[in-house]
Length: 253
Image 1 (cartoon, one colour):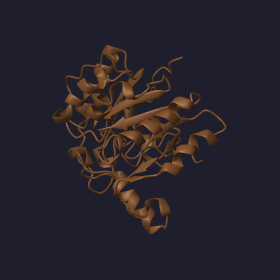
Image 2 (spheres, helix red, strand yellow):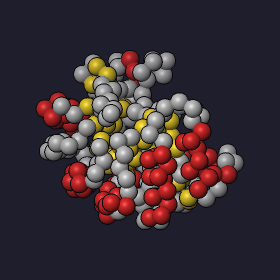
Image 3 (cartoon, rainbow, N blue to C red):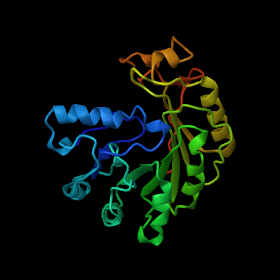
């Protein structure tokens, strides 16, 4: 078990890998690039590269972790994409229900599928449900997320590629925001981030600013977190107004 490099989680768990692109946020998908690299490295799990693939053997993995973990579920996929059968989604949820010592972060661009399963899924308090919103064109996902019975709900505004000036954050416990990384990284306007930060403060929603993505998009070229040697280093740096914001939601008891 290895700690994830994703700043807002502890480890990752991949009962599904691969995905189908769904909206503008998917264009430069990090998971697609990494899947190709992992296949070239000879990892059997990625023999299908980025084609949606189920891994039933992974369903036993959480039972082997000896200490409580904060877990990003399907970091290389989307559990609620159409290629994942309802029965397999239910099995993933059963594992999460049976391991209450762990906290699971489930993130999807398809919250309507999660909602459609209704009472077929058991939303124990250790399952956090989130949706990705990259710009206002997919802001409707927020409305759907609020209808899901999860005890903790969160937004991943990554990669942030447009303004989100009118988020309704009632019933939302946590907001993550961040810029796109890589050679083809799209621009992130500092005003977009400041607006989201202010909205979180008004609604008392935990705010986690992950990264600017690339240093060229960071409004502060002297941000010390740009440097890889910095203990809070993130791609492109992660300071906002001279501070690092890595707030977490309250763990529900």
